[in-house]
Length: 330
Ligand code: CO
Ligand code: CO
Image 1 (spheres, rainbow, N blue to C red):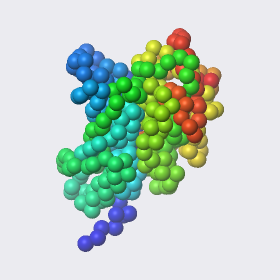
Image 2 (cartoon, helix red, strand yellow):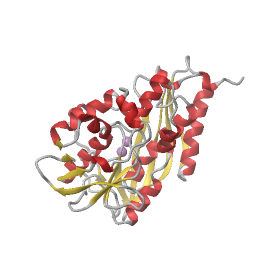
Image 3 (cartoon, helix red, strand yellow):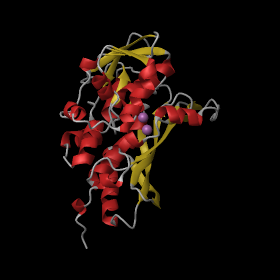
Image 4 (spheres, rainbow, N blue to C red):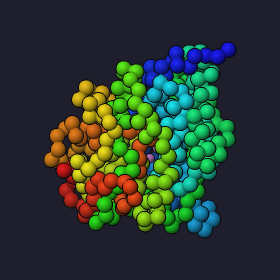
C-alpha cells in the first residue's frame, strides 16, 4: 500500500523547529558549568570553547572529528527534512575543516501516528545527502518517540595542523558568510501557513563542503557554522573564545527573499528572541531591533562564518582587537 506522504504536514508534529529547538545557549552553559571533559593533549578540541565538533588526534597529525545533530521537522516534506538534517549534521565536520567519512542515523519516530513510509523518505533524504558528501552511512539508532526527530552522528577526519577553530579569530581579518540568512523566519512561516520556500530548502540542503575547502585553501584558521544560535550567537561564541571583538556590517549581510516580509509579518521564533536576549549584554549596535532579530534568526543548516576571505562569499564584517563588547553591529 502506498501512503500519500503529502497528506501529512510533518512540521505540525513538532513543538519547535530545526536548530531553533536547541536548548537555549545561556541555559546550556549553566548546565555544563563545572563539568570538565578530558584534558588529555590528544583531545585538541574538547568541551571548553563550545566548538562545532570534538577533535582528537590518533596518529601524527591525523585527527578524528566527531559530531551529532538531530532535530524535529523543519519542513513538511519528509524527503526534504531528511536532506536538511543530514546536511546540517555533516556541516559541523566541515566547520572544523574536516572531511566526513562515516555517519549513523539518529531517529525518533511516533510509530502509532506517522506511517513508516514517511520515515523511509526521511532516511532516503539523509542517504542522498551523505552520498553527495562522499560519506558512508552505516545503520544508526531509532526509538519510538511522541515527536519525530532525525539527524546523524558523523565522524570525519582532518589535518590537525589545518583545523578551522572557534578560538582562532585574529584581529585585522575580514568575516565571510557563505549562505544567506533567513531560513528561521521562513521555516516558521512555512510551519504556520503551509507556504513553501524552495530557495530556503535549496539553501538548507546545500553542503558546506566547498566553503570549507575554500576557507582552508585561503589560509583561514577560524570558522564556525551558523545554526540555532543565529549569526549573532555563533559569532559571539567565536569572539569570546578568541578574545576579540567582531564587527558586523548589517547592510552587507545577505538574506533570502521573503525573510524581511516574514519578520514584518511576525514569524520570529522564540529561539531567535532568546538568541538576541543572550547576546544583548555583549553587543553594541547602531541598527534597530528588527535588524538585530534578523541577525539573530535561528538558522538550520546555515552557512560557514569564516574569518578570512572565501571566493564568492560576501564579507559581512571584520575582527578587531577586543573592545568593551564582543560584538559591534553597525
Ligand atoms: Co556548528
Ligand atoms: Co551542531
